[in-house]
Image 1 (cartoon, helix red, strand yellow):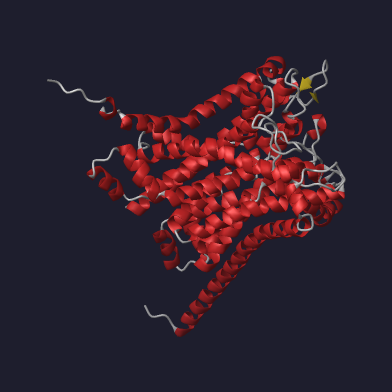
Image 2 (image 1 turned 180 degrees about the vertical axis):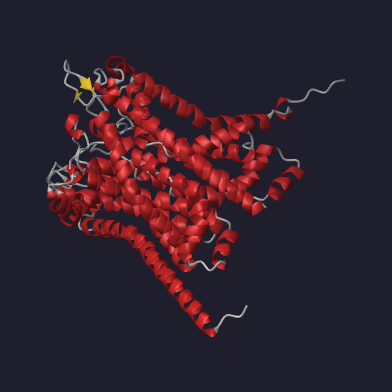
Length: 307
Length: 322
């Protein structure tokens, strides 16, 4: 059936109208979508800018090393808070990393059964537990039983945040070690634990270190569980059985004081904290940008939990 | 003549021990979850015994000895209201971001997704600090006063005079904080949609947006809902930024009546009052009880979210292998 040239022109016109309308909708939607990205990046930019702008004037050697001065005096510094944050990170890692790594080994090497699937599922769910609940738990089982606030309680609470992240990243990096490595070990007549610890773990080292660093970045900024465990203090370290200060706690305390000088010190402490955490995060991301496969899994895990 | 094997050479069942050790470490998480639920239940038992279900529905909150009365309803409601507002703001933004990143060329999507994920790396306490000193003023000047001026007299949710430390500010901060979670998972899920589906849509002459509408959204629906629920789980448990921005009302006045009114969430009342609560009184059991409710809500949300998300991502693995 031949259509007249007139009819063809009509079809062409209809087609054009149809397409141009849809293209306009497409452009509008793409604009909205791009707007979403901008809307999310602006707060990040504003936070970084304000923290640097307001924090930089507070930073000095005394500020980084001294104990806090009298309330509102604007003197003193955040020495104990920095020390406390580092000690708490160290202690949480001592508890959390071995458990996390062993748990990751279990998931990767023996996890292909019912127990493994259950553990993996609840591990993921546990990663999303509100951290303040973990703080209450640490308070009930340690602080209330021993009768005083302590570093141990805080480190225990933070290790609970840490180990599921370490476990899942360890599992993912162990699964990426080729089967042939393990077979080579078996061919040498090695025992399974020797193969796992000597061959598989060392091949998966970089992935595991990333997971550990990620979890350190996560717990370094945690505040809620510390309120009810290490409590805060204005003195330097005096034993694992006593209260201790930490950067997030110090920021909280300072920001609630009605003095300009204290607020400025709060911004200073925030600058120190954000430098530590962004340094860890950017290092990890840069390091893993090259190994995109691992990076993808890790970045998926990263987005998943906070405070 | 039987040879004595020296003890050091006798083979210990090391592999068995290794396997048992790994299983114990793996099961640690299950033990901890059970312990947490048990501890919180037993420590909050006095409050359930005294208040019963009224603890869930009451609104009085008085820790003064002799006149103790605890009702968590305003805080439960406050949590639900802030979290759902955060979802209303955050979910469309996150899905837009995920759409952009899943489509953008590599040189753009890489840095952008890192930027978005840095939002997740910023500690909650710094969101709070930025919130009370910077964001509060912006909200007041640009959003709350205009809204109050236009709708204040007629629409009840905009009724009380804006103060900046209120339910609305806390919800917007929460929305910003859950964007990285939802957008990261949504992007994973959009990438998991089989390439053939997308190509088929393009073959039919679809534009990019139509491709999303025809091929990606219907296929990824469950997964995207799962991603949003994951964000909800995060929003429910979020503590510090909310505590600093929500205004911290207690008792009946904490009922979320309008957006511009101070409120309180379950996590913020715990953060505010936990240290002052004496273990001897009912105050501590009441706060632990609030923690228990929070925990149960969070567990339910997260279990649902993980089932939805993992089902969707499993489909992808199947598609790749096929």
